[in-house]
Image (cartoon, rainbow, N blue to C red):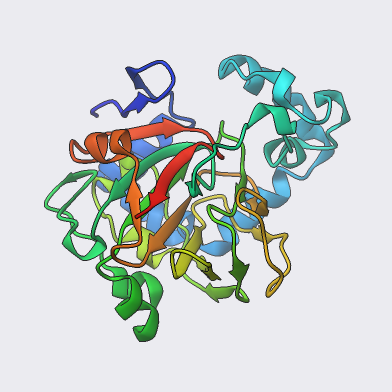
Length: 295
């Protein structure tokens, strides 16, 4: 299996991702025998709900310190002391100190910590994770009106690994709509899986929120579930104006993703994001860092 590499915005280096559950993912998505459990139960919502309940058990606090050590996490960023978490899931969707994620003085910021891909025109994406895979915006949105608005505009995929901060935020200031839920299975959104079948992103359970802005029209934000992410929690109030980088919600245990869509001609994506994405290399950046500017 080819390693998963990303470009770190801060170290300016290409780095290799340490994948949580790598052996299981590789077997499930690359071994013919793995397809049996994948379709029988791994992709099923009941499996993720069962695993989520398992991570709510008080005994799982034993997993927290080893996880911190294995992934060299910076506990100084945590808002609450790790000893206060009642179970692993509470640690997983932990809050951070505001100082841990400075908010860039730019029009659009990354909505989540993670590894990001960005493209100037969603309908023209031909190489996503591997050459030859196109993105199906119509299937993703399941809304003809939104499809017409966003099909030719920029698209940004933000992929969160289990080690990442798992609260997601508003990339822009504006007034959000009610959140629409689109039900579906819960495939992995790791590149291990997406290199095989990109359509997992528009088949998985997901939510759609549309933000009305003053300077860039509408912006659509999708929160995408994945294996072991049975719950996508929204913490904002619809129809109430939100500031850029204010909290939108959080994922319970597991890797997951958000997708941000813009109207065509409204924003200019960051150059390092575009340059790395053109090479099918994700850009690592924190929530609140610069994503785009208004044209």
